[in-house]
Length: 371
Image 1 (cartoon, rainbow, N blue to C red):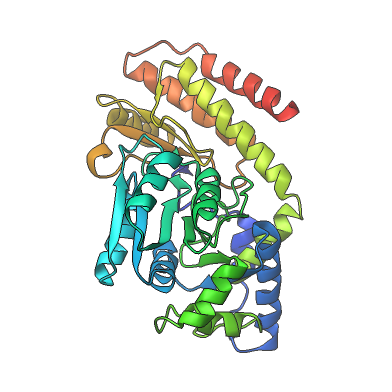
Image 2 (cartoon, helix red, strand yellow; image 1 turned 180 degrees about the vertical axis):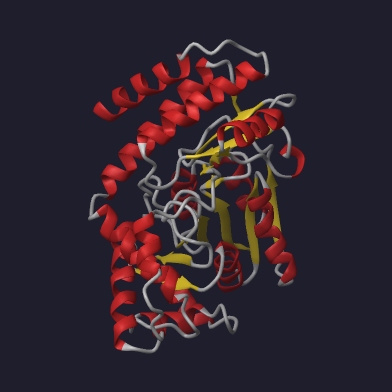
């Protein structure tokens, strides 16, 4: 079965092999050396002054950031299941919050954020998804973060980049906490979350000393010494070092190939008469909307072509289909996906297979890559 869901993504053989080595105790010089390599790779990737690795899914890092950086009131953007989660975290911790709620295909605007900040003087933390993976939407995060810092530099900007980290270059200039997860572009099993921190984020985390397990001050103290406060996910961190060996410092090449693959898939799907769902699509995945045919299409892809793509969640459960573009995806697999979709459309009597999708994909891929 070819796995093309937007997380978890397939784990390459070389990473699986690295993780199959005998388990190291996390309080040894041997593991500290591995931890240091993973940490150095993340610092180079994120271009932020500090980075933390937590033994949790991305939701753990989200909770740590909401609780650490909100003292008065949080503002979050809810354009899907993961934006909704920021509000649920705040509610569970009895933190006052306000949401800007948009349709799942609609990015938030700078103007709407600044309007709320003018109305709510107590807001000291802003939380947003870079890519809202519930619908494949990309918010204009960098533009919003810049505007917030110009309005009030003391508002902490927290960005869930779980589905964007390692997919595209992120301008972290105005971001205080950037959240990532192991099971996306890093092609690792779930269980490791990542938080990149600005200098302001470091200062606040050390000052506030919030929580027990998700205490960022405790982790900052320990991880600067290449160890962790609690038991580290040693196997996944070992796999992360292998990821950095695989890309061999060529993250810009990864970004370029991911962009070309995603945009070319977008064009190929449209050439087959399929509708792209979000108004501003993220590079991390391609999401198509078809209220009638999305679920039957997924079923044919899985049963007849051994291709596993994702449906939607909640109100979009049977209306959308999401195709992963995160990680080091071989070009022949992308070609297979396009051909399988075109063949599945023929099975549904929606169009005849004539190879249009494949032709459009390959032409667009090399055109975009050459620019």
